[in-house]
Length: 257
Image (cartoon, rainbow, N blue to C red):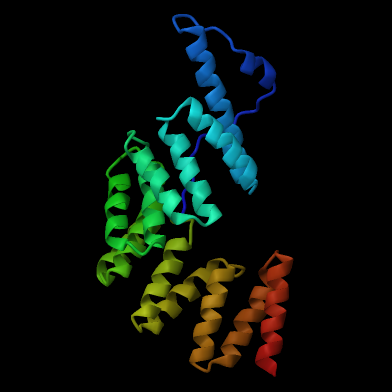
């Protein structure tokens, strides 16, 4: 799971003026200008990442890296960009560079997520724990979910469940940890536990698509088609997303065939 922690984007209303440079007391004008330009390119790159404009993101972030080659947040953003591009090896290289320059804790979580995708769960676990070791880390629930996935991939089921529970305790408003926990129960052939989790989520959030898909798959395997129809009809009536409503209609038609 990716937790993209780069700073809130600034509104650059005077971009040209900033590029020209503004002197600050006690700072070499050229050095200050260089840092400002690097920050502008970085922020524009992050903005492009958020808009899924990878060519623009690479252009801006690589320019920022030229000006500030040791900034961990720029290297982190480039790692994420290469991950989106599909080149995990280059993403790995940039994250390793970022870690050499004392990054914020979120970078450890981000790199661990990449390692998990690369099927290196033991190494990923190490970086999730490094993120969680920082009491100032703002999104420990995300790191705990990722840690649970890494532990599960190592067949450490009980520890994984404990990590998911901790994520839920830290942020009860998100259902991601519960969804991962349900999948863990299914992978260990404990469908009753998974079903209870899906029921719990859908009771409070009847329009939750991932929970509805998990419940539907489980009910079909158990040949509980009437129950599946009931859940689908309620989901159809409660969801506010047109595509999700269309999906529910298709599933109801399929069950009636």
